[in-house]
Length: 329
Image 1 (cartoon, rainbow, N blue to C red):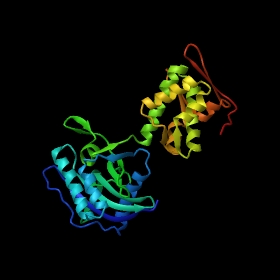
Image 2: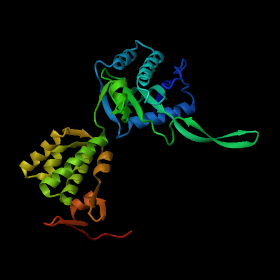
Image 3: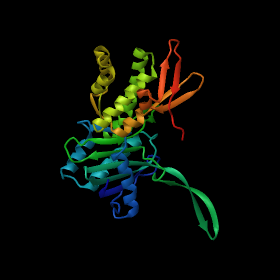
Image 4: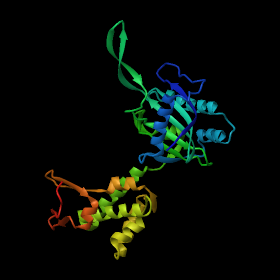
């Protein structure tokens, strides 16, 4: 996806006794280095199944601040400075949050206009220094790029009043407790589970359901996985648990209703836009692991069809796996 960087600025935030440095000048967006860095990390937020979606709380100061910017009542540089000052205040309140650079950029794409907020943690890298033919190894701090990962970042859509957020973060230990300070204290938003998290939840429920109603039969589990993949393929990435239940449990109406209700009680939405890639990654493989350490994995479709893999569950809880008509490579 092609991205156009409109504005960008970098602030240096310290909470270790050194003063923070708030930039008075925007970054040179015509620089290849600047463009490569921003584009790389913004694309990760646009196309990443692990990213959560979120909505601002109505009382969030950033929501009001960015609303004024969106409506043309505030300039980019002053808006970015206010955003940086808020994170700086939080960091000084909680010194366990490490110093960082805060990069803020306004970018455009075919999907719309966005404000990217990247909290750039430092990483130690090796480098050389040379003086009068005396070459030595040294260490210096660097920003995450080729092998680094931005652990705290948000991409805020600027095309509508709701300004939905794509967010990535991890818990940080603050005052002895794990906290998602980036979303809770800084953005003040309510994140939803990511696509990966939703797919993992569905898989966990499937395992429990098959354990309860089918004594953990791997064939049934493989059939449900295959139905999920077929549903995502037919519906262009969307998954309806009603359709999956109808395919697997017809004509067992009571069992079908129980499956759908179990999903809903766990918070699984009726029509999930998981995407074919995420569904295949989560459900494409069936694994059987024995108590003696033997583990077998194979495509779920093969186990569901039964043409090449036949799984028999015995009354004593053991399983026989028979591979048939396989061409060796």
